[in-house]
Length: 184
Image (cartoon, rainbow, N blue to C red; front, side):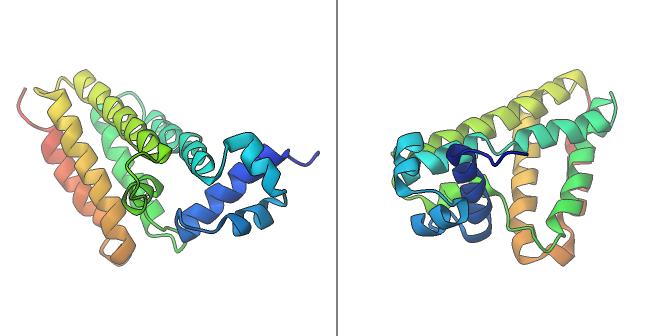
């Protein structure tokens, strides 16, 4: 197998290091991990801000949600609940460091940072994913229900950082059942 190019190595290094250490990880650490020259960073991404935004754009987290739901079958209710079952597995792993999107949103104080647009676009796509499932489930208010599910997901990802042994995904799953079972 051939070695990935500088762009791919930069993305992988930034993805790994920003998840483990946060978006304020130093450029030098990213360059060292990627084994590329500084020029490659500017050539491919225009700088660290562009690299961070592209890392969030290409993280593939949304695809993992879709895969979990697809693996759960066709029933929209079971598809949504499967997300919380998977979150329980993910959030109790020692390697879990929280939601990379929320962490970036909170850490980057410059409102013009390009990562903010990526975070919002990701959250909007997740909202549509849940809204579509709730619509298929014939939920009486699929948009509002998707808001509720997203609050639960975000809560799990935040709470599990400080209390993984509390299994917040299990508690959120029970609340998701209430959202899903609203009278039609």
